[in-house]
Image: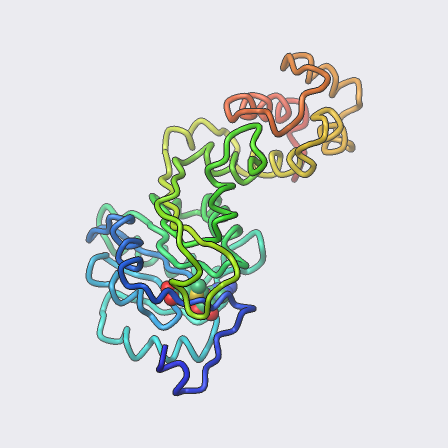
Amino acid sequence: MQKLREIGVEPASRHGQNFLIDMNLVRMIISSADLGPQDVVLEIGTGTGSLTTLMAPEAGRVVTVEIDGHLYELASEQLLRFGNVTQLRCDALKNKNRFAPEVMDAVGDALADLPDSRLKLVANLPYNVATPILSNLLLCEHTPHTMVATIQKELADRLVAKPWSKDYGALSVWMQAQCTTEVVREMSPKVFWPMPKVTSAIVRIIVDPERRAAIPDLKFFHQWIKAIFLHRRKFLRANVVSALKQHATKEQVDVLLDEMEFAPDTRTEQLDIPTLLRFTEKVRALAPDWGL
Ligand SMILES: C[S@@+](CC[C@H](N)C(=O)[O-])C[C@H]1O[C@@H](n2cnc3c(N)ncnc32)[C@H](O)[C@@H]1O
């Protein structure tokens, strides 16, 4: 980090620039991703390139993305010696719902280059964009095999939360409907420079192709759970009536809820994933154009 100071770079909190300075934890992130020569790694937030430098010898290809021009230049000095690293200087996200096309193009090229390739996201993520990065990658044309990331502990709690708990919401459902999610390790603010205000965690998310195949329309499911979890403590009926207001009458909603055998006082936060999957399919049959 000395180098950052020498060239006059001050970490920018708006870009979530908290660098991981405990190298044992950097190695733990990499070992949790179980990298091999068929793996294409996508890293969002190259920073100074400390994680990238250790991943490059273990992975087939690494695509690493950095928004900050100074850090991009600084990391280039370290990364030039690796023939399998593609460095991109851009915002990884086009908007909160989509990755930047140049990121997906670079990932597509890297995947096409390797036989039997698999995509893995491995990153110490900038906290302000961690949620869209993890959730949007599951909607992209290149499905990840695994995601290992350092994120805020509060977000990690949401990724593993179960029904009825305070952290259970649309993100928990979206991820767990398709993946196994696990907190590998909590991390004190002290392992970063500068220290963030919050505790962090390393999470590992492994995509389960069977669970994914059981969701007929991923985009519809994603939008529907976001809509009904908007006020997750409210009665489910109110959430559904509001979400379907242009598409179904209150009477139709009541028939739907009866068919699902939901009690009148059912709240969204108590519904488990199999129930939500069945419910989504009933809604899709009733209002196939919803959310388009
Ligand atoms: C938490 S730091 C991690 C840096 C480094 N990988 C490490 O482990 O120390 C996050 C990095 O992501 C970069 N960043 C923030 N927002 C970004 C975005 N939207 N797209 C690409 N990079 C971003 C920041 O500039 C910063 O370098």
